[in-house]
Length: 228
Image (tube, rainbow, N blue to C red):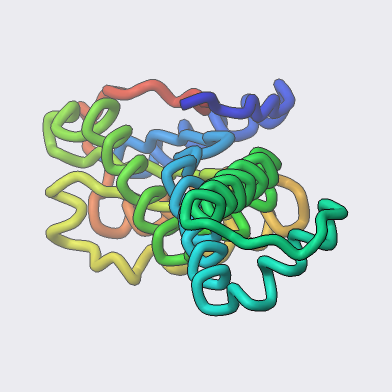
């Protein structure tokens, strides 16, 4: 899968890193931030749409042969001719192939491809990608199981917060609603860097309440913003 580069500014990176450091200075939590250009290419969905349109073209030809066969004769400039089964099958194969390729090529334009993906599927795949990154970069990598991932996927317009077991045992998922709202508000304004900063601040406030920083606490995970 090829990701589209995000190219946040150096100032954005510094602001997010500073926000993470400030949040972790008040709690035992370890915050990981990731921004991805996309979480999934959804090419399988594009294939399904192409196959569906191809199938529908076959169904329409089968239901209305008396309309389409004379129409093909007129388009080709032929006299009315007898259509043999072989000719009909050849026409059906040509029509289905042409429809499949046309819809596939149209969906190479990513905005259209994403627009045709059901919202629930987008959310599920972004969540799956966030959980995978969390397992690699944060899960059980801290002594107190206090790692948490803030993940933003720009192409799908989705964000996820995934917490390690100690945090998840004390903080219900809906508590992160304010962090998600702050993030989304800045994203809609075209400021993904500021959105991550706002989300980190909100998450940090929750972590400080439930996991106050101990005197011997150490920084166990990098503070830097990761772009994929």
